[in-house]
Image 1 (tube, helix red, strand yellow):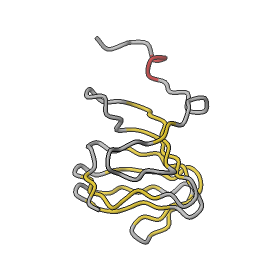
Image 2: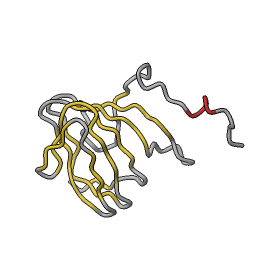
Image 3: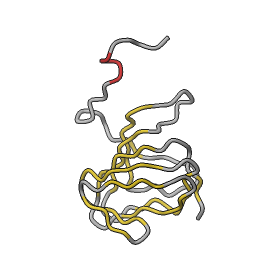
Image 4: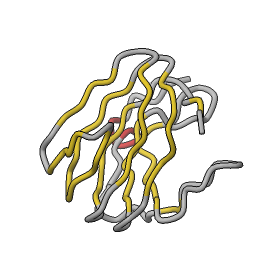
Amino acid sequence: MKSTNIEDYIVQTETAEWKPLLEQGVDTSGISIKVLRRDENGRPPSFLAKFEKGAKYPYHNHPEGEELMVLEGSCIIEGATLHKGDYLYTPPSYKHSVKTDTGCIIFFMVPAEVEILE
């Protein structure tokens, strides 16, 4: 049964701890996350990701697309530099990697598991 208490759906992001992003077979060093929501299978479709200076996430496919907003710093996605406040919608089956030279924090909405391509 779903809760009717709004407090059960609030995430205090300022006090939540960053946890290392761990994905089997993927180098995610320098990337941490704060989960904002989990789906019925326990997968987090909404989360914050913190990339340390020089961190990168490998080339991958988004079967159902993705939305992101840079909250701090800047990142590079397919040659385009996104800065604080920039929003990106990637349509289904869009492929890209993410890297940062400066470090950044990004809000992600990823409706389906990504497919690593490299």
